Image (tube, rainbow, N blue to C red; front, top):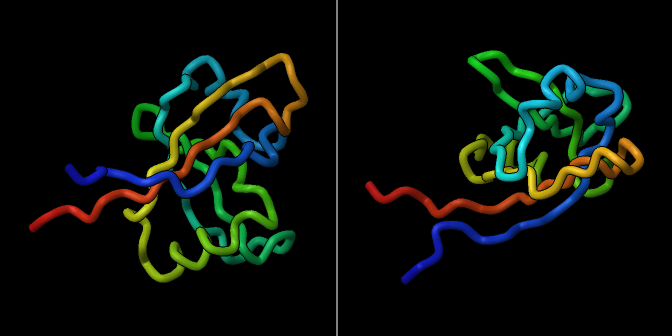
Length: 114
C-alpha cells in the first residue's frame, strides 16, 4: 500500500510572539492543520512562508517557517503547488521561549487520483 503522505521537514514556528497566535492560542492543538502561504513582498525574508490558522472562516497569521529553512517550500508555493504540502502542529509547549513554543511537521501529500 502506498503512503498518503511523506514527511518533508519539521521546524519551529518563527515569529510567533509578533503575530496572531495569542488571539487563537486556546484553539491550537497538536494535530491542528495549518496552511502555508507565500509572502513574496516580505522585506525581511525574500523566501517568507506564512503559517496560517483558520478558525471559523477567519485566517490568523501564526508566524513563519524559519528563515533559512524555507527556500524550497517558498519555491514550490510560487510555482502553484499549494496543495503539495500538509502542515500540522506537532507540539505545543507554552512554558518555553516563544520561538520554540510551536513545532510544525510538513508533509508532502500524495497526488489525488482522477
